[in-house]
Length: 126
Image (cartoon, rainbow, N blue to C red; front, side):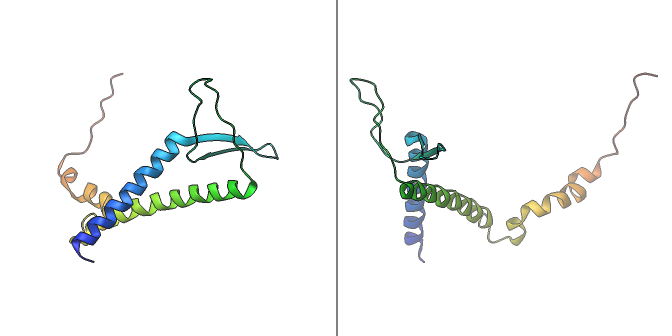
């Protein structure tokens, strides 16, 4: 994959990611299904009538609720995979940086902190 294709792909994924977050933020709303369960989901719809300030009512079938929930799960999985991908590829030239979380305790034990003296506790009551 050349650099131009990679840049286009990353830009497209980033725009889809931003749009999906905007969709969740701006279009989230609540329904009560046939069994009395409260369902929260997001999709574009007409917010309020400017003249009456009444929220338009719309309904969903059970299949639509399942489909909208599936979109939410896919979005969560996509977010996790993007963050994991960014974490793993932050510096591919240094293999230790890929697992930098695993190297933090070693750097604390054997790095700059090791050269200081032990902590001293002062008892103020004596």
